[in-house]
Amino acid sequence: MEFANNWHTTDVLVRLAEPEPVYNAEDGRMILGSSMSPETRLWYTGVYESEAPDHSIRLTTKAIDAPVVLLLSSYSAVNWIIPNTEQNRIDAVFYASGDPGTSVSLPSDKNTKVYRLERKALKNVYKLPEGWWAGVENLSDNLEPLLGSHRLDGFTGIYETGALMIPSLTQLTNGQPE
Image (cartoon, rainbow, N blue to C red; front, side):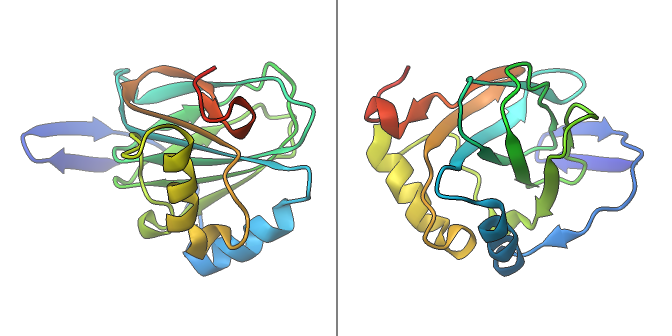
């Protein structure tokens, strides 16, 4: 059981789970490199918090014929739910949060690897200061300790939500919302 107290609000989140290893940016970079192929798409999703009482955010991924690696970042504890109804090949999920208790739920029949990163290894960005694709390029630059030479192919960011379609911005749309 973990207790979260941020400024003027309090919240209790109970999650029973085995302890997970927490990777720094350097270790994450090595794991990410082994998860990537030239065809792999790298999608970033950032939120401040979930609007749901159970802290969940349901992610629906757009259908794609290429493998995908997801980077999920939140300020508050979130239960990321990824049903993968589109049957995408999600090779890996990397996640980080400012609060303890964040988790990732995937279909049990999938071989997706899930990695928890230190908070500082995956910056939390839910709003692009430069707007559109220039902001995604800047985020790729800022995540260089984790990404190395890899670049983000998709971005989704919002302050608070219970569900998202990801990604909302892609390089294919020239940075314009789909």
